[in-house]
Image (tube, rainbow, N blue to C red; front, side, top):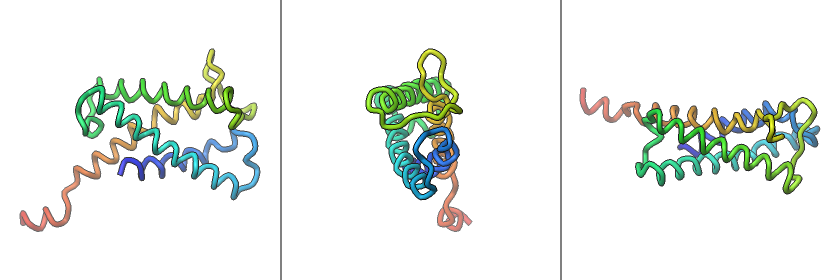
Length: 144
Protein backbone atom coordinates (compact mmCIF):
# COMPACT_ATOMS: atom_id res chain seq x y z
CA UNK A 1 0.00 0.00 0.00
CA UNK A 2 2.84 2.40 0.84
CA UNK A 3 4.47 1.81 -2.55
CA UNK A 4 1.23 2.20 -4.56
CA UNK A 5 0.17 5.41 -2.82
CA UNK A 6 3.69 6.78 -2.98
CA UNK A 7 3.85 6.19 -6.74
CA UNK A 8 0.47 7.89 -7.20
CA UNK A 9 1.28 10.97 -5.09
CA UNK A 10 4.79 11.27 -6.50
CA UNK A 11 3.51 10.95 -10.07
CA UNK A 12 1.32 14.00 -9.53
CA UNK A 13 4.25 15.88 -7.96
CA UNK A 14 6.56 14.84 -10.81
CA UNK A 15 4.08 16.13 -13.39
CA UNK A 16 3.71 19.42 -11.51
CA UNK A 17 7.48 20.00 -11.27
CA UNK A 18 8.31 18.78 -14.80
CA UNK A 19 8.47 22.33 -16.26
CA UNK A 20 11.47 22.93 -13.95
CA UNK A 21 13.56 20.32 -15.82
CA UNK A 22 15.08 20.55 -19.30
CA UNK A 23 14.33 18.11 -22.10
CA UNK A 24 10.69 17.36 -21.33
CA UNK A 25 9.02 19.21 -24.20
CA UNK A 26 6.85 16.38 -25.59
CA UNK A 27 3.79 15.60 -23.41
CA UNK A 28 3.99 11.83 -23.88
CA UNK A 29 7.71 11.91 -23.01
CA UNK A 30 6.88 13.95 -19.92
CA UNK A 31 4.14 11.55 -18.80
CA UNK A 32 6.42 8.53 -19.26
CA UNK A 33 9.45 10.16 -17.62
CA UNK A 34 7.32 11.26 -14.65
CA UNK A 35 5.84 7.78 -14.29
CA UNK A 36 9.26 6.12 -14.26
CA UNK A 37 10.52 8.73 -11.77
CA UNK A 38 7.50 8.09 -9.54
CA UNK A 39 8.33 4.37 -9.46
CA UNK A 40 11.78 5.31 -8.18
CA UNK A 41 10.19 7.67 -5.66
CA UNK A 42 8.01 4.81 -4.45
CA UNK A 43 11.13 2.72 -3.85
CA UNK A 44 12.77 5.63 -2.03
CA UNK A 45 9.72 5.91 0.22
CA UNK A 46 10.10 2.21 1.02
CA UNK A 47 13.74 2.97 1.84
CA UNK A 48 12.51 5.48 4.43
CA UNK A 49 10.24 2.77 5.87
CA UNK A 50 13.16 0.34 6.03
CA UNK A 51 15.53 2.89 7.57
CA UNK A 52 12.96 3.69 10.23
CA UNK A 53 12.29 0.02 10.92
CA UNK A 54 15.98 -0.70 11.40
CA UNK A 55 16.66 2.42 13.45
CA UNK A 56 13.57 2.32 15.64
CA UNK A 57 13.19 -1.49 15.68
CA UNK A 58 9.44 -1.27 15.00
CA UNK A 59 8.00 -2.54 11.72
CA UNK A 60 4.93 -0.27 11.70
CA UNK A 61 6.70 2.78 13.12
CA UNK A 62 5.33 5.06 10.38
CA UNK A 63 1.66 4.23 11.06
CA UNK A 64 1.48 6.13 14.35
CA UNK A 65 4.56 8.33 14.33
CA UNK A 66 5.73 10.45 17.21
CA UNK A 67 8.10 13.40 17.14
CA UNK A 68 11.18 11.15 16.94
CA UNK A 69 9.63 9.26 14.02
CA UNK A 70 8.88 12.46 12.10
CA UNK A 71 12.43 13.68 12.70
CA UNK A 72 13.73 10.40 11.29
CA UNK A 73 11.44 10.75 8.23
CA UNK A 74 12.74 14.26 7.61
CA UNK A 75 16.42 13.40 8.07
CA UNK A 76 16.26 10.32 5.83
CA UNK A 77 14.09 12.16 3.29
CA UNK A 78 16.54 15.06 3.21
CA UNK A 79 19.53 12.76 2.75
CA UNK A 80 17.77 10.86 -0.02
CA UNK A 81 16.48 13.98 -1.78
CA UNK A 82 19.82 15.78 -1.77
CA UNK A 83 21.78 12.64 -2.71
CA UNK A 84 19.56 11.69 -5.63
CA UNK A 85 19.46 15.22 -7.04
CA UNK A 86 23.18 15.84 -6.59
CA UNK A 87 24.09 12.49 -8.12
CA UNK A 88 21.70 12.86 -11.07
CA UNK A 89 22.62 16.46 -11.87
CA UNK A 90 26.34 16.61 -11.11
CA UNK A 91 27.67 13.05 -11.18
CA UNK A 92 25.74 11.37 -13.99
CA UNK A 93 24.19 14.32 -15.84
CA UNK A 94 20.95 12.35 -15.96
CA UNK A 95 18.85 15.50 -15.78
CA UNK A 96 19.25 19.27 -15.65
CA UNK A 97 17.22 22.16 -14.31
CA UNK A 98 15.73 25.12 -16.09
CA UNK A 99 16.57 28.59 -14.77
CA UNK A 100 13.20 28.57 -12.93
CA UNK A 101 14.18 25.75 -10.54
CA UNK A 102 14.83 27.20 -7.08
CA UNK A 103 18.04 25.77 -5.64
CA UNK A 104 18.97 24.77 -2.10
CA UNK A 105 21.55 27.39 -1.06
CA UNK A 106 25.07 26.00 -0.81
CA UNK A 107 24.13 22.66 -2.38
CA UNK A 108 23.00 23.67 -5.86
CA UNK A 109 20.28 21.02 -6.00
CA UNK A 110 16.62 21.64 -6.75
CA UNK A 111 14.57 22.76 -3.76
CA UNK A 112 11.30 21.35 -5.18
CA UNK A 113 12.51 17.73 -5.58
CA UNK A 114 14.19 17.83 -2.17
CA UNK A 115 10.94 19.14 -0.65
CA UNK A 116 9.17 16.23 -2.37
CA UNK A 117 11.11 13.71 -0.25
CA UNK A 118 10.41 15.75 2.89
CA UNK A 119 6.68 16.27 2.41
CA UNK A 120 5.23 13.32 0.52
CA UNK A 121 6.43 10.37 2.63
CA UNK A 122 4.70 11.64 5.82
CA UNK A 123 1.53 12.28 3.78
CA UNK A 124 1.66 8.77 2.29
CA UNK A 125 2.26 7.24 5.72
CA UNK A 126 -0.70 9.16 7.17
CA UNK A 127 -3.04 8.03 4.37
CA UNK A 128 -1.90 4.42 4.85
CA UNK A 129 -2.45 4.70 8.62
CA UNK A 130 -5.97 6.06 8.09
CA UNK A 131 -6.68 3.36 5.49
CA UNK A 132 -5.60 0.55 7.80
CA UNK A 133 -7.36 2.14 10.74
CA UNK A 134 -10.74 2.05 8.99
CA UNK A 135 -13.05 -0.73 10.06
CA UNK A 136 -13.84 -3.06 7.20
CA UNK A 137 -17.44 -3.70 6.26
CA UNK A 138 -17.05 -7.33 7.44
CA UNK A 139 -15.91 -6.21 10.89
CA UNK A 140 -18.77 -3.73 11.13
CA UNK A 141 -21.40 -6.26 10.09
CA UNK A 142 -20.01 -8.90 12.48
CA UNK A 143 -20.32 -6.57 15.46
CA UNK A 144 -23.84 -5.42 14.59
